[in-house]
Length: 121
Length: 107
Image (cartoon, rainbow over all chains, first blue to last red):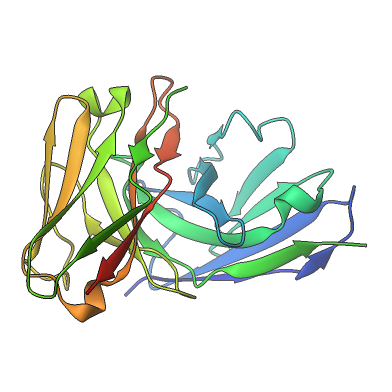
């Protein structure tokens, strides 16, 4: 059974950079059958796709966040990461990492439990 | 870019059938996936592709699509089906988009 676990700071100050890591167990980020994705959900609101990364390092980002987002993958640690720069209060959300099928790209079959990140001074 | 539109809230009597819909131009081109989210929990994939259920999802959940509308049907809704449901597809640029979500209440 694939498991994903988000880790990183829970509190970030405005204008700073958010950094989160997702550790994958029970599966490999090097699998060519999957991409690895970040999705967020502001409190009380819906889901927003942030982007995804392939084991090769190829990325696709949500156009609304593209200028501030960087994703990376570390196959040696079986992890992938998210960096979001210049955060503001609107970036406060539960951040999920998820596995996504390479054949569909909107098929998120395994999710992390999510981590609430708060942007506040 | 394009959007996916869902009714904000739907209710169903226990044991009855309910259909949750998702509207969007992109649905003419891409399959829809559906996610169930209960309070405080991560979303769970319930339907994907033409009408496929992941292992462990009850067969009372089914999906269908026609033109610009995708539907998730729960036949014989149970109390444990009360949750938020999100549709997901891709827009004309190939980027992933989610619907706004539908809160299902089982009466």
